[in-house]
Length: 394
Image (cartoon, rainbow, N blue to C red; front, top):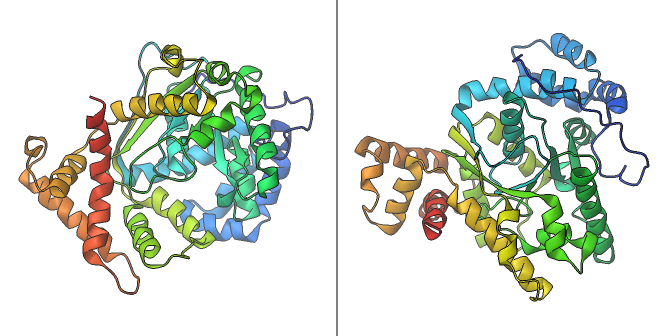
């Protein structure tokens, strides 16, 4: 394991039980959580093939040696992720502007491509540079098995409750807002959160004002002040290839053809493992300018809805500006517009390779009344939209 100047993270600073329903696990809870995982039949059944050729006995011994959250991240989570990076990622890097001190506490708000890896890879990059990892916001819709809940809470994830009765939405949102503010301001712990609920499956990333509304519930009368205390930094995540692109295209057709279509828990599980195992090529994480540098541009005289919309636009512009462009983005743009505008950005071989890639991805889709043209165009659109949004702010 690589050297790190990280200090042991003391998660035992909570003095009450107010956030026990959503917070990550504490160091003092690690032993009990690991015992639970090792005694869960489904945890072994699903994880054992993933860690191969590491023997289960060796993996279990490694788990048993973990005494705190940092031990668990270093010796388990990152060991597994590094294993998959070797075959699925050609290059991974973090572009960090010098004006952003990663030792300070931030709310990193990013576009969302992959269920597991967006936050996981970002934390690996921070870890490699010797910085403390972030806490991670994760929707409870993904916690389909008890072992998944335990696993993500061991990995510094806190829970975003989504499927709640309408009469409880405000209280649940305020509770989450209080937790995030407390974590950053009092616990001095950075947080990662996606700009929207779920992934933008067409890669047309937009910050949901409902998310921003939640973040301001600690002080509804002063939304700009609420944002300032969070020290928000927009984060742009760019994958050269999205392993889930064919699953997203499949979902587009099913939603087109069936008004009542809903994804199942099994669908989410397939997306998780496809994202982890699938080829991604080059992956770039690029931090934008801190929101506090631009927040003064938003007038306090506007109503709350207008303020939230303006702040959402500021975040989106910064995320769009800092995308890393790869040949598939330029090729997809030219294919979708039937032009050669960016022909100087890729070779003839790269274009043919991308077209072949799209065809292979579509071939993986098994559904009735399969619409090949629609599916191909959906995948191409995903890669083109990233460039379209990037160009819109240049």
